[in-house]
Length: 405
Image (cartoon, rainbow, N blue to C red; front, side, top):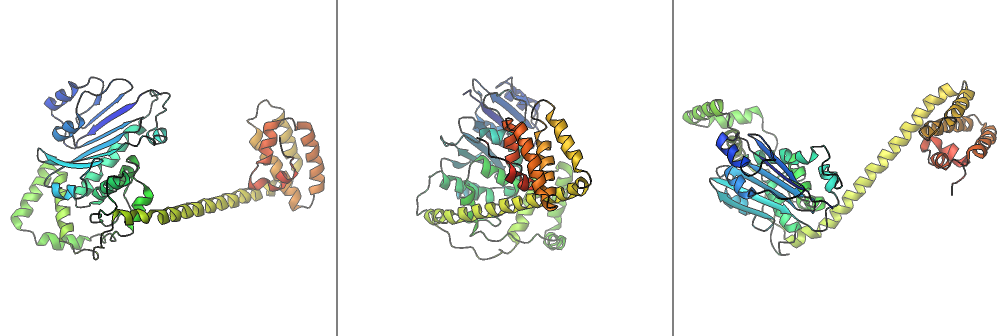
């Protein structure tokens, strides 16, 4: 198997000319703009240090390789996320927090040696052809990076997922207690759902953890925001408004939203923390429930497909009943053509003729004619298989079609 590595970086504030030159000195092959960096390697490696680059240049980094390693590095201004808060969730090998240059950074890693079979499904890359044109591999970071704003606004679900990553990777003891479970863990927004998928955090483990999550607070109204802003000092409001107009700083807006959130009363009492062992003990039940719900959805979808197929057939029979011979003639025309591409239409026509005969109590006559058809074309194995697998609208036809070897 060929080697494939993907490096990607993003930054909110555009890089300066000097910073771009520093990055270009590390690689001449990367697709580089003031806001992003993308490079892939099927041989060799990136000469830069991703951790250092996020400390000094970028807000987010994503890496994956076809042997299974996946990494994320995200950063926030220390005024938006404190190191103490980050380390309450991220203090291990697969989830690490540190502070540098006025930023708090998180490094998250998933590196199981036996779980790479989803590589092509997730990243849209054929392992036998790494030159395939496509950008699905580049879509993960823009989505996941949006979760940075949610954290800056006081939403700590990303941090809790990082702690679950440590638990999932076996870094915690059975009697270790979970950190505070943030509200809304049962309903992850797309950036966090993508982060969980990218890092292979077990969905049933997330569901088990979410059982103790407080409900999300109600969406604040404009009136709620008016009451809160009315309590701010005039000088502070003037300063904030001027900075928003002048800089459009998203961190400033996120900080205001975080302060507003912190001013709200909790939606309910915090549940008692569970041990890691208790959390994992709840996973099998959540998995059984998920599978049962999935099977129910699939059964409902099959029933819906059957109803739709039969309704469509009823509409066709309304026309077919006036001239069934035209359908037989069309079957003959299609069989005279080379290849198997017309077999689905042949199966549909014969299925409709069989259903019409069953409805009009003329099955005997149809069966005789269909037997002659089978005698004439029974050597067409692909056609015989298609006739046996005709679907819900071909029940009457299937009963008259001999099984193939």
